Amino acid sequence: MSTDGDALTKYCRATAELARAAAALLSQLPRTVKDEWLRHSARELRDGCGRILQANDRDLQEAKDEGLPAASLDRLALNPARVEAIAQALESVAELADPVGERIESIVRPNGLRIEKIRVPLGVVFFVYESRPNVTADAAAICVKSGNAVILRCGKEAAHSSRAIVDILHASAASTGIPAHAVQLVDTPDRQAVRVFLRLNNLIDLAIPRGGEGLIRAVAEEARMPVIKHFTGNCHLYVDRMADLSMAVELAVNSKCQRMGVCNACESLLVHRDIASRFIPEAARELQARGIEIRADAQSLRLFAGGQPASEQDYYQEFLGPIVSLKMVATIDEAIEHINRYGSHHTDGIVTSDELAANRFADGVDSAAVMINASTRFHDGGEFGLGAEIGISTDKFHARGPCGLRELTSYKYVCRGQGQIRS
Image (cartoon, rainbow, N blue to C red; front, side):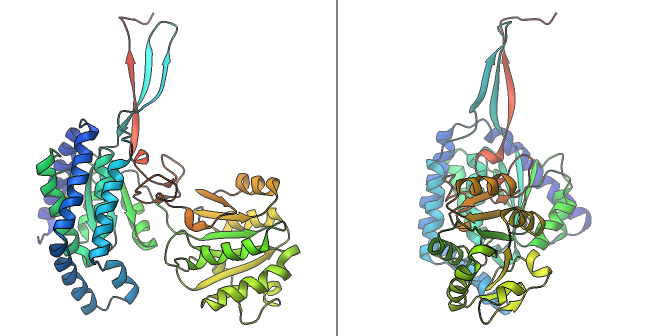
């Protein structure tokens, strides 16, 4: 649709009002209905694979015409295997426990009044994300399973693919008893629509941006409702003086190289000076063999060839590619101070055989996830056993780390009495 001025505002408000009404119905549905929708949608996605791929071909052609880089085209592209993965993801969400209605706590007061703390949906989620069609289905699945209606605003590059997927989800909703407007895809390409939705805090309960730092900061600055977010993923791996060096090299390579363009990839290595002469040459050799440029402090540069001097800005940087910063530190406390100063509070790890050092690091590092002798790449909802996630939060209020089903709920108190009155 094309929109301008008042028409755009009316469209956005009408969409949010429909989502609000759907959320009221959705919050009361039993798990069986939501799970049947997920499984039915998975079957229909498989059956509709051809239609989805045709729509995706349109997106890819338009993206190529606009000169999108190869990495972006890869994230946008679908094939039968990727459509199957989308369907399997929906089935996996159906297998997860339904958080809605969970009794979190229950106490009985001396006067016999029973007070229960019950998990409830948040309501309406506005989800803004860049061009990955699988995220369309993932977000819809996790929101509906947790009892929330969702308004999806995808990047224009994935518009045709996302529309094909949402149309299938709508058809499944009609067949399984899910409210028709539980999942809505914003139909206008007008960028002002995001700003209008972010002002509808009387209708939308939560905004979640997923994408580059610019997108996330823009949403956080404009939103009048709470926002779950992380700005960057400047993740660190600290190699302690008591580290198993073979393990440390393997973890450094995996944390950095297993997949570089993601928020939980390692961007900075910190190395205790006592083991630097043994660790750094070997780690540098393995990283450089994989095409990684190493930007290091002067002390570290003396221990290997081919490095580049690190600037102050390099230690703040989320590279999202074949670059890593490296710094030698004198103590674990210096490593902790460096991480808390330069990091993004996302994922930071230590390699050590010293349990006291591991505990000191875990207590001192102010991040959503701390990895002890494990790759930073494990900070992920699926890897944590949470099933699907809608993003990773570095906030401290409401949700931190992978945001799965429970993180899309709140709670209310239900008090049961037998006529008690307050004196």
